[in-house]
Length: 347
Image 1 (spheres, rainbow, N blue to C red):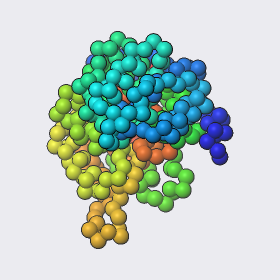
Image 2: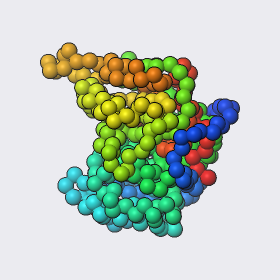
Image 3: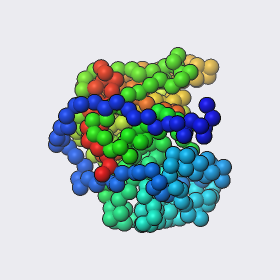
Image 4: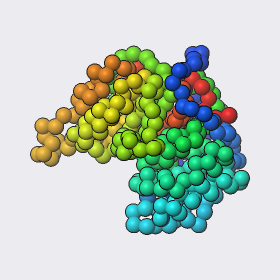
C-alpha cells in the first residue's frame, strides 16, 4: 500500500483491558504529564543527534501532516557538523526553543543516530519543566529522554521518529497513548510481516511471571553510557525496557553484564525486551561461527535474576512500534505476552 493512502486510513482504536489501576511505591519524583495531542496541533521537529537530509525532513513533514498535524522547525534543523546535526549548543538550542515557543504543542525528533548525549549540558531543564510538552523519539534519543525525565520529572515517550514507518500499528498506539490518553491500555505485540522464521522477531518468555512498575529504558547501548552520570534513572521497582540494533551477541553480553554489575536489575520489577534487530551472529563469519546466539545470551544473563523477563515485544528498530511512556505505571504479564499501561500518560 502506498504511504499516503496508508497513513490516511491508519489510526484504528485498540481494545482496552479492564484491569484496575494500582498504587506503586517506587515512582519518579515530581512526575509531570504533558498535555495530550489533538488533531490540528503543531509539532516542532528537531534533530538532536545525527544530521538529516532535506529529503528526510520532507518525509517527516509529509508523514506528520498526513496524520493531521501542522509542522514547524527552525533554520538550524539542516545544520551539519561532521556526523552531527550541527554544533552541540545549536542542537540543544533547538530543543530549548521548541519547548519555549507557545505555538508548538509537541516535539518529535526526526531521527536518532548519534549525538544527543553531547548536548545534554546545554539543555535548559528549568525551561522544559515550566513548559511541559510531549517529546517523542527512540534509539539515540534515549539519552535525551533520560536527561529530561531525570532533571524535570516530565513523562517522555519512546516512540516513532519523523522518518519512521507510520503504519497502522504504529499510528494506532501513537494515537492511543498521546491523543486518547487511555488508562488500562493493552499493548499487544505482533511479529513483523515476513519475519515469522527469524528468531530475532519471535516473542520468547525468558522468565515467567507478572510485574508492575514505571517504565524506564530505551536503547541498550545508550542506557549503559548513562550509568554513573547525573542523567541516570533509578531502576528500583521499575519495568526496564530495552532494545538494540546491529550488536554482536558478545557485545550485548558485555552491556548486560555492565548493567548487572552496576545493580541496574537488582531491584527492578521486571525486564521488557523489544526486538534486538541484526544482533544474532553472522554464521558466515568464521570469527563468530561458534558464538552464542542472541537468545542464549539473553537467557544466560537475564534468566536467573528472579524477575519476569520477556523478549520480542513490538518496539525497537522495527516497523511496528509501540509508543512507550517513560515514567508511566505499567503491568507486565509474561504468560500472556502482554504489557498494559495502567495510567494515562498525558492530561
